[in-house]
Image (cartoon, rainbow, N blue to C red):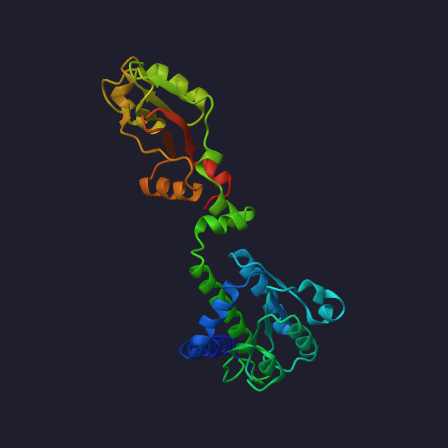
Length: 322
């Protein structure tokens, strides 16, 4: 008989989702206590676990470290062979074991207690070795694994990971961790570009296509060709931005019966173009403006409307801003 894999996948997700929903109803003051312990910690949050719990712990450590809580993962076996020296006064240890009886982890618990530092445990068994050594216990309530044999860590690892995320989010809230803080921890990659690159990093400042407002359309077209932006910026006698003419403006002008290249450029211009006075905002925020205004070019000016540079949609796309 052929398996219905779609149904199996749906059942798996449903079981794990229900595990999370059940756990959310059972959240108690232990989370608040854990947050307080970590917030008052003057050192690092050290996470330890074996097997699947270890893999989840490594991910949790990465999440904490990238959201403002200094953290790293310590494997129990490595700890027994010298890496216990990584733990020092002022640290907090978060130990993970679903059964609470992982042999390698259990062996290092007495040594951790020698440091007289807080030990937060994540386990299902309050009376397990980990449960008894823990100063604070975050229980893992799991009715059943999503595994059809109810053996392979599935629902339990999902819950452990989600509780780690919940704890990290609580700490972010407690620290008022903002988008700018997140950017400083992620300077590389797409995420970093989204949250770190500013308008001033991408805007064009040199050789901008600019003409005076008393110029002819012919003179403006020459500047458009030189500037390679598909647009010419128009300024008054005090170098203040007053308008712009784009390729689209010129095409629409050509459709007029009395069109002439000798006409004033202002006759075909777009008046009051979209501008930005703060070049320190994130490029991703500028992209939102460009998309909302349905334009391709954003002009950066100072408070006196004097042009400081331009930001083109193509520059944002090439920089990987989304």
